[in-house]
Length: 335
Ligand code: 5GP
Ligand code: MN
Image 1: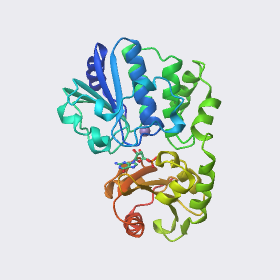
Image 2: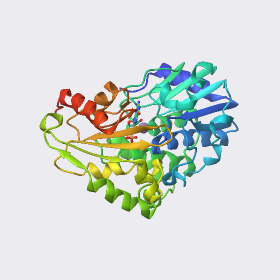
Image 3: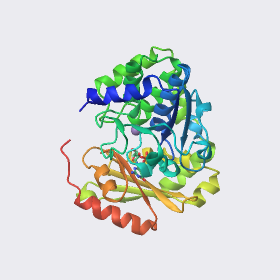
């Protein structure tokens, strides 16, 4: 389902001649949240618009994997985001709570444009560019740039490519359509280097990450009977693991990608301790036969059908117990 023309008209009207805009993406931003936000922000700034961008969670540090992105100087910490912006644009954020400390800007802003691809999006804006069929929010932003007549130059391309790369799991997920590869081709034609972007995103972990991965993988649990017999693999990243190996929470995003390689498990789960918020940030993935998005939504989280998450304030046993119970009820999808 693509975006209605009326929604495009509203969005391009809001952004067409704006002099100032505040951009925000979801807490603990990933490649698509940051990339899509920075791509639009950079392009608007080059057109003469005053742009600031932020996200509402600590630590306010760009994850090392995304430190190569252009236009990161658009970013300001939460305290510097105006209390009542005239125009707020959110990226990759399905509901206001996912804005964390910036959630209160939604009711106070003059207008809120929501740019997203989460099927669970609650339509909390005054205008929406929402395409649940899009492989990444970056796909929506690419079309928005075209419709605004803003060039997709090398800078915008690097950011958009990062969103596309990370949200399609390096062009491996079911969302990898012909149009995804067509957009990737167009972005590459600007001269960006896919080898350098992949290296920065996936192959620039501190050495401590390798040891952490060893610890976390060696205690992974396989439950063949879970998910109606399709199998669950899970593990935990505790605060002590992060401390011992000198790693931040933002740098363990890739752990789930290793766990999910186990053939015996349809579903993978990693519970990551967030020492600042005193909770577990739970990442889940499926290979296509289970809608983990629905499972996580039922547990107060959200996401996509095959990549989703939730936040748990309980202990590991309780968190896994609730997840297992929901998983047992999830219908098996035809693949
Ligand atoms: P990841 O596991 O990579 O952090 O997230 C996978 C997907 O689930 C993303 O679309 C992300 O936005 C969503 N997600 C992860 N954690 C949460 C959460 O605590 N709440 C909600 N609503 N969505 C989440
Ligand atoms: Mn996304």
